[in-house]
Length: 187
Image (cartoon, rainbow, N blue to C red; front, side, top):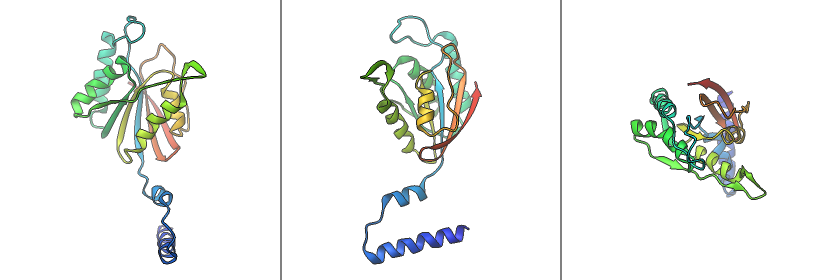
């Protein structure tokens, strides 16, 4: 089967070259796609104040160190967080241990519903994942953004995250753009 597939691709390439038609980038994108492992977590436990952007609590700081210990050898190539302090602090121990800079992908609210994160800002984070084909990516989000990112990545199961739960670790294996398998772990 592989030989036929390779032969078919070579025949198509030769045909395109002989006819002078431009090569379609979508064909090579599909062939060259490498599976990407995305680790998604909600930020760790937070303080109650200040209400708009609280830091992590002592329990949250301990959890963030545990996350770093668990993911230290997971082949993480990029770390993305929202603009909020609690997500950045959750990612910081792994960033320091691995020498990877934390990149903020700001969340914007939906203009038609100011209580909901815009799908465009969630898609921006998902597009960042596709830049790291074959590598591991950590995304630290929120109870309302992690499930949506899993959905946009094409996850075969989309979780609900309770506001009081901080120990979910979702391992999303993106095997084709828009198609992924999800494993739900606790840490």
